[in-house]
Length: 173
Image (cartoon, rainbow, N blue to C red):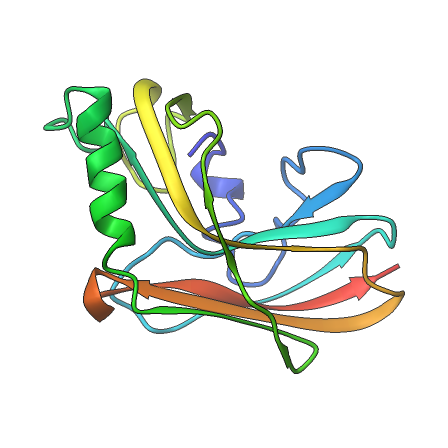
């Protein structure tokens, strides 16, 4: 939400923007796609440093009062996220042909301020959103050995109406 639409890794079809806004020198974040009715999962390729752990959302639900103006209290935002999480029917991850379990992770803090870029991926009004919350299923990997690796993850919520995920070919160098 804080990254402009033109360079947002969530909208990236190829992996060209995979290095945008990487948060620190220790962890590399892989983006999925925004949940929508399209089963198509993007196929991305990127290069990452060998020393980085890897973090990605198999499926993540987020709510804020700009995107959902009917949510007027912190409790409303938390309830929306909780209801969305309860509708998850798919959460799978495969790393180099091995199934990896995803762990449910609530945002910390549970309620947070969210800065939304003016021209954002969700095409909603930019600015600050107070409150916002998120909850989802994530995978955190130790640094991978140098070489080529595949990571595939996908999720579905709203009882199969919305799909998210991505397929990555990682060149660990």
